[in-house]
Amino acid sequence: MELAKRTITLVDPQDQEVVIQAEIAETDAQRQRGLMFRDYLDSDAGMLFIFDQPQELSFWMKNTLIPLDILYFDAEGNLVSSTTMTPCTSDPCPGYRSGGEATYALEVNAGYVEKHGINADWIMQISG
Image (cartoon, rainbow, N blue to C red):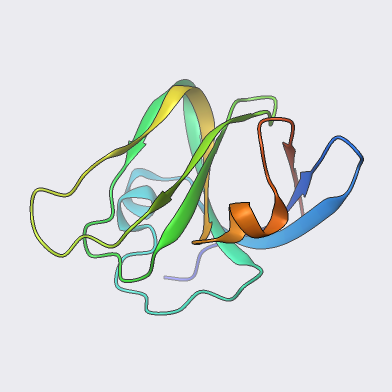
């Protein structure tokens, strides 16, 4: 099943931008599947998970083959937290919590946050 795509722009306080073409996971089934079983993700690609209500989110890497950075955002697009997640090969798989209420979770290739210097001052904009 092909997912809808949207353009995600991450903006720093000096209005510098990085752009990600993200697949959208907004149903329970899409969120549960996520990026499982994929062995490659383009450098400017990702997956945006959208939730109906702000809540503390937790993700895991069961059956996910590539390391990922996850960025959690609140309803206004403010960065709540980010961390690097590693593939999980045996149970139990660790959870990666948002550490606060979030409405969005954006997964990109591991190292993306460090490469672009993304920190708490950045915001997310969704278009397309």
